[in-house]
Length: 173
Image (cartoon, rainbow, N blue to C red):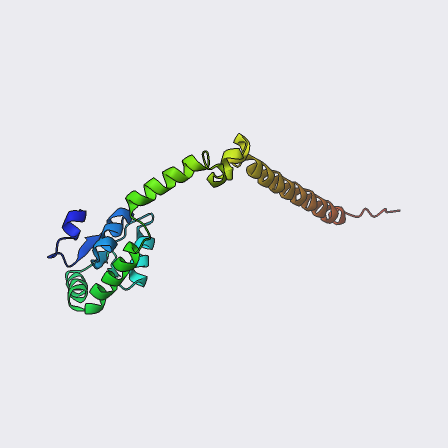
């Protein structure tokens, strides 16, 4: 897909909004017509929309005319291509290449004997903390207390009102 997107004749990328395809479109500096379906796809397309290099459409409401209009907008309005190229330049502007980055971080970890300071504190959690069982238990206890207190209050209120409803006995001579 990357080879296709970087071909000089490609002027537009129609995508569902998957993150890897959009990375490739940004890298190639190509405007995107997005049809996000689920998951992270709407957010991914919105990011490109905010950068001015994409148009988003709803797959369920698309018509022939709206599709053609949006394709022509992306192809004919120079701002989309300009914004795509600008976003691509920003995306590619890195201090070192990916290969240099791999070498740097490998040497860094070796030099710092495993670089334990970069490891997540999640590795130090107990199993019940990792699965949030302590939080779930606290929430369940809180909910149980609320239900119990509510039950007691309802019981006392009902007992109070029932005591007033008892018939008064009148003694006759």
